[in-house]
Image (cartoon, rainbow over all chains, first blue to last red; front, side, top):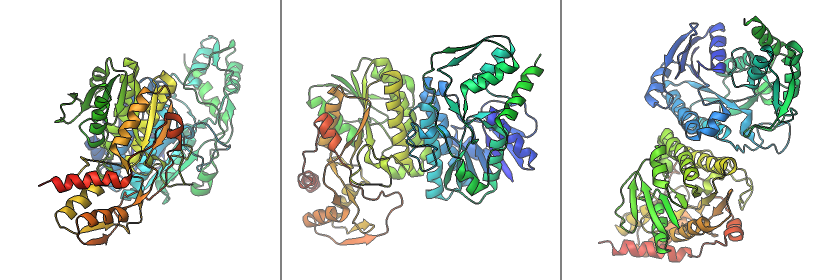
Length: 294
Length: 294
């Protein structure tokens, strides 16, 4: 397939683009930032510019839409920026997909649910987002699914677990822990460390995009999460085992989302997808990377 | 109070601005379009420009935020425009209010609920918007309420019933029926006419904005609707009684929202607000206006 990947210069967009190239697809990247990746053609463009997105999408069979303000702290500081990129940008992707006759696979987030009413959270759970990040990500998802219903644009939304893998953003908890510990600095857990996440390996997420692009199913949102909940404290302990250093506890950061167990059952049923990378193996890759760094 | 009214050149924003002037408030209007209204100072500005909104809000005690793409058909055709004005615009209002230390009263809509799960719909009913109009209006509400929680900006969101009153938009069902019937043209009901709306008189809505501006309550969304459901067919029959003409039935328009009964009980309890204009009296004003037109 010919596939446009938005946000291809970002951590997860890059993983998805490279994975799709490896799967034999013809991939075009689209990002506001330039990428050093030479495995696929890249276009520098602006999601806020309808014509720029439409031109990039001409002739593709699918658009994997990962371009977003994905940093929750930046979204809190600049909600108008999150609203523009995540909502207006997604509306532009819907328009471009309609024009190209392309399917859209959207990078949504498990965080759209907000405060859990029951667990594990399935896709019927109410979505009550409470922060500029998840509010704008949900609105982007809803606009795309509305384009599926109103304009016949096939859309699948993947509500992703917390992604990790090589190349993670410098302000992610993984990178902070590993960077500090490998440099011999103490690690501070913000909050009591009991909060958990279904850390989902980037390659597993990339597989979900590939499968969703090729599936005839559309008009649906589904959870794409690894099954196990790992606490921040467990993560810190794994890192400290490899790079011994002090472990201390600090204040929780505002905007940090409480734990909630999310079910990946629908994705297994509909797409035959489940995460295959055990957490220990995924973290091992990151720790090896850090050990290799001089 | 000093109050900024966004969308003041629009139908409902104009009603709110004039009502607030009548109540002794010092009102400033803000709109992308110019207004012929001389009852208050008006600024021509762009909701998408953070600095323009912030400058307009400097020194005010409250912002009544009615500026929006309020036409559901325009929102369906140009979802990127609805996303920009309704979501980015609301984020900018939140920023401006934080800077000014002002309260925000937001014009949300009963349409945010989507398909009803039970009726009458209270504020605990899940919000599942399904159209670019209600999706973007809800995201604007959520961003403002997030600013209340995260940044201490007091916000009250009013989920308004279908507003009517003098000066209605030319493509509203009221204006279409009255304009056609008073010209002797037949009226076509789209759908079977059984769909109903809790048509809420503009002056009653303006009262709710006034009361909400002055209330200490914030961080909440509440329904502001007249209690009675009036079917489109009933409305058409009232119009035809005054201006006799043929009544025919056509196809439902895509984007038309099914009926759902919404409860105004919370607004009565919290703000002491309820609609006081009976439907017959409100329509009479519109019919008189139409009769006066040469």
